[in-house]
Image (cartoon, rainbow, N blue to C red; front, top):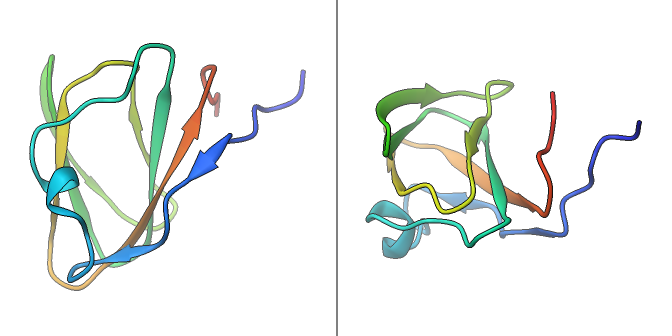
Length: 91
């Protein structure tokens, strides 16, 4: 089976251009999975339900489930992008 392809991706954000909406509590819509990919540096992903914190680095993406509340926090200089899928993105 083929791996799903994202139907949309955000621009690449850095520590200065990361929108306030992503730094505060938000969630994906029903039926939408998000994969946060760090291109450079580190980014802390905080899931609120269930609660967890993960440090994301290049090659170590973070998965956000549909309607899962979360926010991100830059850990110094970084670059990141979010890919959105309409089905589980798999490995």
